[in-house]
Length: 183
Length: 305
Image (tube, rainbow over all chains, first blue to last red; front, side, top):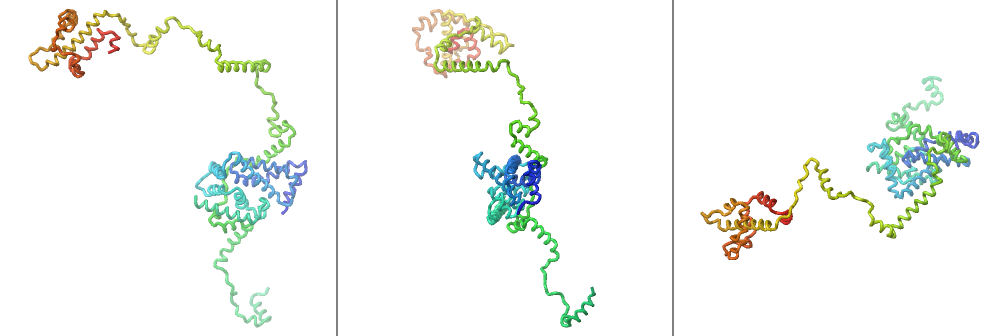
C-alpha cells in the first residue's frame, strides 16, 4: 500500500530545500506520539524513550530523501523505531554486562519506579507481565495489542512472515495471561 | 400501490393456484434472542472490522485477557509533544552545522551569543613562572624521595641535632603545674621533706613492733589461764619512749644478754602461723597501725610493706 496523499505531500515538501524543515516538522508532529508510545513500551524510561525517539527522527531526516514510496511512511517509521529500540536495549545489556533476566528485572524495576505505579491495578500488572516477554515478542505484542497493526503491515515493519507473527502473538498473550493469573 | 385486498384479488387473477395456498408465516426460524441482540452484535462487528479483528482475535486466544482495559498510565513531562518538534529541529540544525559556532547557535542562541572569554583572573606572570615553579617542585620531590630511600648522611646527622630549647627548670615544675590546672580549687599538697633518720631509731622501732607481736603471742598462748594479768592490756599503758628505753637496756630479753639464756618458754615468731599473728593483731586497730607506720617508718619502708 503506498503512502497516503498527505504523506506524499509531506515527502514532496521535504525534498524541496525551501520547505524541507517545515515538512520535517510536520512529519514529527504527525507521528511523534505513536512512535513515542511504541518506544516507551519497550524501554519504559522516559529519558531513554526520548533519546531513542530523537535518534529515530535523525535517521528519518538522513534517510527520507531515499525513501521508496512503495510502503506506508508510518510502516517505515515504525521499522526504524523498532530497530532503534532493540539496538538501545542491546547496548544497555552490553554496557552493564547483565544477563537477559537482569535486564527484564531492570525494566520491571523502572515500571515499579513510575510515580503512578499501583501494584494493585491490573493495567500495571499487565506492564510487568509484558516485560517478562522476550524483546521481539514484546514488539509483536505491543504492535498488535496497542497499535492494532494488521499482520500484513507488521510483517513489513518487522520483516517477518505473517504466520510467524501470529504464532508469536499467540504465545505472548498466553504468557501474559499466565503471569496475570499467577502473580 | 393497491392495498392488500387488491393485491389478493390481483393474485387470484394472475394465478388461482397460488392464491389458493393458505397464507401462513414463513417456516424459517431464527435463533433465540436474535433480534434483541442484533444491534449490539452489529456494533461489535463494525468495531472488529475497524481494528482489524484484534479484539476478537484476542478474545479467541484469551477471554480472560480480553477483558482488561486497554489503558496506559506512564507519565510524560508536560508539553513534551508540543515542544518535541522544535527540539528535534534544533538538533537537526546543530547536526548539519558547518562549524562549532554554527552548531552552538543552532542548539542554543543564548549560549551562542555569549562571548567565549573566561572571566577568571590569574596572578600576574603566572604562566611565565609556571614552568620554573613546576621544575623546582619536581626537583624538591625527587630530592626528598632520594634522601628517604638512600638513608642519607644528611638526614642521619640531622636526627642527632635538636634545635629546640627548653626553659630552665621546666620539667621540675611541670608536675605541680599540671596538678594545679587539673585541681585548681585544692590547696597545693604540703611538701614534706623526708629527712634521713638515724639508723638506731629505725632498729628500735622495728624491735618495738616485734615486741608487740611477741607480747600478743604470749597473750594468745596464755589466754586460757584465768587470773593472769593481760600483758597486752598492760603494754598499752606503757609509752613508746619507755619501750625504747627498755629495749636499749641489757634487761631486754630480746636484745640484751638475757636473750642468750632465754628458754623455750618464749614463743618464737617462726612458730606462729599467719592465722596466729592475725589473731594477736586483732586487738590492734588499722588506724593505730597506720598512725604508727606514718610516724615511724620511712616512705621506702611503706613502699616495701
